[in-house]
Length: 635
Image 1 (cartoon, one colour):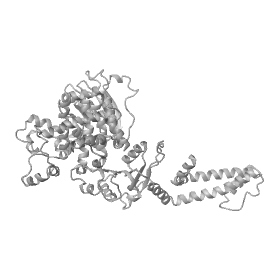
Image 2: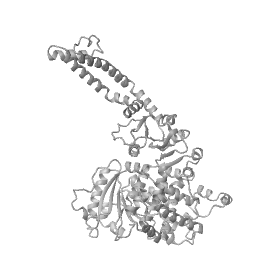
Image 3: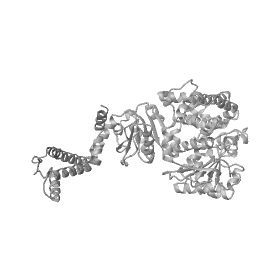
Image 4: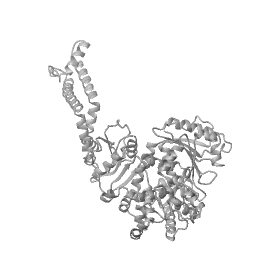
C-alpha cells in the first residue's frame, strides 16, 4: 500500500504534468518505435516494405485506414491494440501540455503551495535566494520560491526526511494577492530578498495582513542607512505594533560577514604565541565584503583589557573606502580632541577615552598586501606579531586566490615564521563560487608554511548563517538580564524591538571570544557556542572565573561599541527635554539616541550589577548549552 500512497501523492501534486512536459515527446517516440516493431513482426514481405508499412500503420491515429483485427497472432494483435490506444493518448496529452504549459503548471503549483503548512517562502530567487533554498532543503524544510524568472531545474538529490523539492512560483512578488498565492497565512518564515529595499518594504506592507504573529520575516536591506534605520529604536515601530511580527533586517553581505567572523576569527581559529587571542587581523581589498568584515569587528571586536583589536586594511583605494565608512560610522575614527562632541566631560582622562573610542584601531596601508609584507610595512605596524587571519576580499574571485598564493609565499620566507605550525589563516572570500584552489598535494612542504589557505563563498556562508544560527537561544537569556526578568518566553522575544534583539545576538556571538580569552580551546568553544553540541567542563568554568574581572571589562566595552556603531551619542539632556525625561526615562533616551553612561568611567552600582549578571549568564549558558538547544528543538 505504500507505493500506492506514493503514486496518489505524485499524481495529486501534479508531478505527472512535469513528466509529460519534459518527457512526453520521448514517450510518444518510444511508443511509435514499439508499434513499428510489432507491425514488422506481424506483416509479411521484404524488410524495407514491412518497415515502411509498419511505421505508416503506427501513425494511423492520424490516418485511420488500418486496424490490427487482421493480425493472426493473438499476442501481437493485443499489443498493437494497446499501442493504437496509447499513441494518440500520449500525443494528445503532450500537445495539450505544451500548448497550456504556462497555465497548467502555475495552477498545479498554486494547488501544491495551498496545501503546505510551516513552509519557508523566499521572495527573490537569485544567487542568495537559491543558496538559502539549498541549505533549507538540506535541513528538510518545505520551500516556496517566488521570482519573475523561473530558474533552471534543481538537480539536487532529495532529502530522505523530505521528499518534496522546492516549489518555484513565477509571479511578480509585488502582486496584491501574493500573500494568498504563496499561502503566507501558514508560512513559518518569509525571506524578502529582492535587490531593492523599497520593493521589499512594499511587499512587507502588502503581506502583513496575511502573516500570523509567530511568523519570522527577514527583510533584505540595500544601504547602510536602511540597515541602521531598521535597527533603530523607532525603525518599523508602527508595523511592529500592528502585527507584532518577528522582523529582522537582512543584509546578505553583513550576515555573511557575521558568519565569517564567527567561523574564521582569530579568537576561534588561532592560539598564537601571544596568548589565546591575537590582537591583529588583516583585510585586503575594498569590496563590500571587506567593509562588512571590518564593521563586524568594530561591533563585536575583542575589547581585551590588553588592548584593542588592530585591523590592518591594505590595498588600493582603502583611504577612500574608509572615509566613506567613517561618514556613516564616525566611531571608527575619533580622538580625544573631539571628546566633548561625543558627550565626554572635562574630567575624563585621555587614556580612558582612548580605551573606548575608536571601537577598533584601523591601520590603512595604501599599497597591496603583498607589497606591504615584502617592503616591511607589516612588520613596522605589527612589531613582533603577525596577523592571525588575513581576509582577502576583492571583487574578483581569481584575484583573491592569486593574492592569497602570493601572500602565502611572501610570509613564508620570514625566519620567525618558518617551521611553526600552520595555525594562521589566509581566507579568500569569494563572491561567485569556490574555485577549489587551496592547500593540497601540490605543496610538499606545507608543514613549514605558517599560513594555510581556505576559500569560502558569500552565498553559502550567508545561507548557512541564517539557517543554522543558534544565537537567539543564548540571546533570550542575555535579554532577560537587561529586562530584569527571570525568564523570557518566545512571545516576549518576538515582540521586542529589533535593536534589542541585535544587541543580544552580539552578546551571544561575543561569548565565544570571552571563552577563548579565558583559555578554553577553540574546538570546545566552537562546538559549544555555535553548534550547541557540548558543554564546558568544570575546569573550563574555573578558567573563566579566573578571568572574571577581565570578562566584565570586555563586556562593558562591547556594549559601548555596539551603541556607538548604531549612532548613539551621550551627555547632558537638552533643557527642553528635562520634564519629559523625568516622565519617560530610558524611553526618551533611546528615541533621542542618548545614553549618558557610554563614556562614564565610574559607573553606578546598577550598571556594575548588570555587567556582572551578563558574565554570570554567560557561564550558565555555556554549561547548559545542550539544554537551550533541546528546549528550542522541542518548541
